[in-house]
Amino acid sequence: MREAIRVSAVIPASPERIYAAWLSGEEHSAFTEALATVEPSVGGRYTAHDGYIEGTNLELEPGRRIVQSWKSSQFPEGHAESRLEVLLIPVEGGTEVVLIHSEIPEGQGEDYAKGWVEHYFEPMARYFAPETGGEEELTDEPDPAVVLQEAAPAAVKRPRPKAKRPVAKRPVAKRPVAKRPVAKKPVAKKPAAKKPAAKKPAAKKPVAKKPVAKKPIAKKPAAKKPAAKKPA
Image (tube, rainbow, N blue to C red; front, top):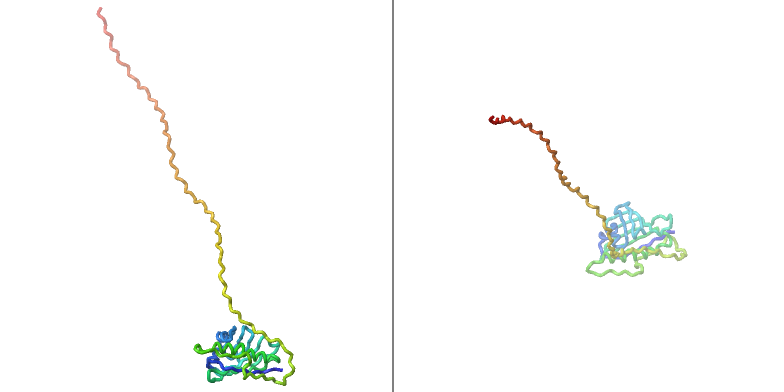
């Protein structure tokens, strides 16, 4: 047995503005306050709420209508994707956004009806609120236009725990840790290579000269004068 729900709310923005934001990963993340990715074309895949939701774009009518396959991580294993139709109707004060969500697993319709209000319509009203005006307030109770329909008479349902939505955590600014100065070890300096000192030329000792032996000069014998004879 599958279920179908219909929820709606007036959002202070034009149909074209909401259509473009719904199919933008950046803006879808902003107005739901959780991470989303979108391929804005027929057959394109999308994710929302940090991967809790995923599906495919089936039909796109710019500014008027979006049809998507839709599946959450709470679907029973092997269950086919559900069908989500988003209607954008221009009204006084903005756009009436109507969500027709069908082929939901049994017992999950009521939770998703509340989830569309709490996790889409309320943050969208804050995101698209005019800067000069106040924020549109949505109560925690489902909109009077919310209708829960079942494909067959309702059977007695056992209470099931509500699926908890992952809360997007804001990054906490970390204080810089003061680093202690690291004591630097003194670098051992290599002794500078000394240039060899220029050697002074050794003083030369005077060489003792041997005296040259002189040859004796032969003297000529002196001519002897004849002795004077004494008179007899």
